[in-house]
Image (cartoon, rainbow, N blue to C red; front, side, top):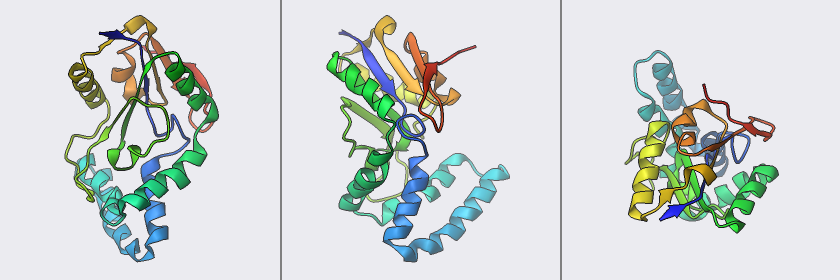
Length: 202
């Protein structure tokens, strides 16, 4: 079935910061004793900066709060920390697309562990998959080309084909070009302002 689709990145697109960094701050606030986890995180960050490790082990260290927060706390994190910071104008475009019958898809490198608590009218949420109550990734990092792989698999399962000419994609980052190239209408969300402009591709 041919379908008009609206794809949205999450961090720096629907809100003006990286939600994983906010998860660390939330975890430390709820459980101050977790401060001991910052030392290994710093060591992993250093190793990554020196090109000694890949990004995957660093990301798992960043997501350490997932091991210690229960589902109620993860929902509270999304509701109390992330929702108040949405860009109202970007949310308005999403709501408009939803009302106009678009299949709306959230596609993010952030973990599904808390993205699943979104209050926005998404028909599908795609994020990095984590083991339950764990900071261990069970899927590749959902970024760049991996976003396209995940999108294509999900749409194939639903027998949906992208209506290229009428579909939209929103992102702040050039790393999302593979996803943006799936559609004709590409919109850049400018970091820290939420202003939307055409996404120029070279």
